[in-house]
Length: 107
Length: 122
Image 1 (tube, chains in turn blue, yellow):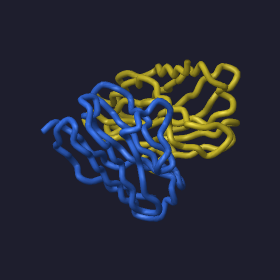
Image 2 (cartoon, one colour; image 1 turned 90 degrees about the vertical axis):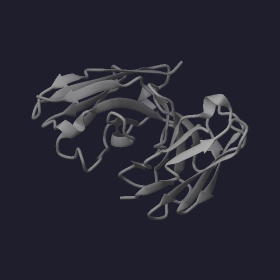
Image 3 (cartoon, rainbow over the protein chains, first blue to last red; image 1 turned 120 degrees about the horizontal axis):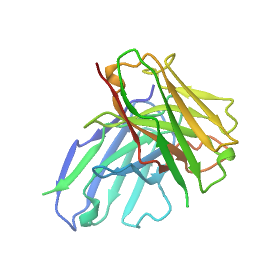
C-alpha cells in the first residue's frame, strides 16, 4: 500500500501569502496524484489531478507539481475562501490512499 | 448537472448490517467507475471501495475487505455498498464519488455526494 505523508500538518498564513503544501509517497506513483480541498461540513472538492492539471473551474492561483514520490500544491496568493484542509490522493495502484491532510488556517 | 445522492445511513449495533445507496444523475453512469470514500468524525478521508463501469471489477480497502460489498445497477443509475459485520471503527460519513474521466482507471473524484452518516454503536 502506498502511504502518503503530508506536511506540514498545519500551515498558518495570512491572506495574500503564498502557501506551499507537500505530499510524499512511500513509493513511486508516477504523476497519478490528486489534491482536494475540504471545508467544514462539505464534501471534498477536486483541485488538481495527475499532479499538475487543474480540475474544471479551479482558479489559476492553485497549481500542482511533482512526480514519482514528491509533490507540491501551491496557492500563489491566499484568498479568504482558501482556508481549509487539503488532502492528496494517489491512483497509481490499489488500494487508493489519501494523505492525512494539511490544514491551512488564518494567522 | 451531476448529482450524487446517498441514502441508507443510520444507527446500527456492532455486528449489524446496512446497505447504502447512491443515486446518480446528470452524466452517463454506465461509462464511469464509481467509488465510496468515508470520513470518521474529525478525521481524514479514507478510500473504501471502487467498482468498474461494468461492475466486473471491484476493489476494497483492507479495513473492509470481506465485510463490505460494492455493486451497481446500471438500469437504475445507482451504486450500492452492502456493509456487514459492522464495527465501531466503521462510524463515518460515507461519500459516493465519481471519477474525473470515464472508460478507464481515472480514480480521482471530481463529484461527490453530500454523504450519509453511519453510526455503529450499542
